[in-house]
Image 1: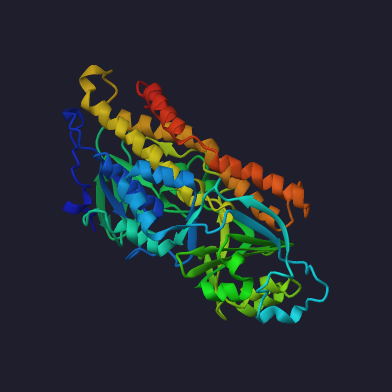
Image 2 (image 1 turned 30 degrees about the vertical axis):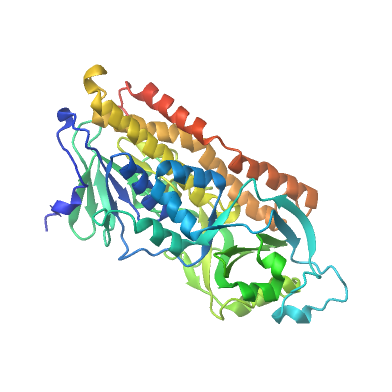
Length: 475
């Protein structure tokens, strides 16, 4: 059957006449996750016409918690008021001035018994506090993924989001003018001036973008760590950890495992437990598999009562997430022609720094600023070089994005994987040395929080203008 293009498949305001210099410019975003939806807001805010194509039937983020740094929230503010307003409605800051790192393995007091695994350590007596970090630097705000995504998506125009649209492939005629065409599994097509893949670790856009030159970068790699997540009433967390620890971001570390807890909202606590896994992941077609709480309790039977008390809060059959990333086989570039990838589709990382989504939002801001420069270029085309057409301008913007974001995001992929080893006393440089762990984490977190967003945007514009007159026909 011949593919067909329905009217709604042309993003709002699409103009196919390359020489008309109509300022209406359209972007198709593949992937309706947090980064894709926030990017849509940023583009709409700047007068770009947007359509999101999501393969699922609805928004499908997990109910787990996650958090955004002050840098990420600054980028939200610069992207669109609607984004930061959504964050302010559902997110809360850490309630204590310090993040705490505890020895979750050893028992501090010899008289403590391992028989307390079902009740935990409500007074915190059995755990040794290894060190603290001031949390005003990263300044995390926590929330539930589902709450935030639904909140930020609800303020998008109704005709922007299209569900049940699984991309099979695309055709980008660059450097020739004419639209990028998207082909979907249901036989329909869509057109846009540009395509941005925000479709996660198993990105279809990345597979086509880099597959010919780096086929190994099509699929993510298993990091040999598994993850178990749950959200429980804050009162349950307090019963296990005590009020101070339950209302604060805490990390319990030890050999081969670590557990992160922090409050989300005013009445919930998020628990994320990671365990090293020497085996291969059993089913690469599924990143989430059914698990058993008794296996967790068995794996952590020698750990302290606080850690095992947290495990007891999981359901008897918790889901287990395989932790995959792009460290072993990174994408060699994020843009080619009028197609680019962002967020996990570009640089999927392990979650051990808690910064993956935040770095995706940094990506979104750079793309939005680049596309804003494209609009300016189109409006003054008669004053610039002839080859700085809409096609060339978008290509320049996407290559500027690649130039600005590649080094920082690839650092995150590497450092996030190493951070998981640091927490589990497996990183060679730190082992189980408290001072070495503290120094490693301080150095890495500084790269995340001590970041000049304004300078990033200035450099984006500078690189765009540098590239604008280039001939991209050989790229």
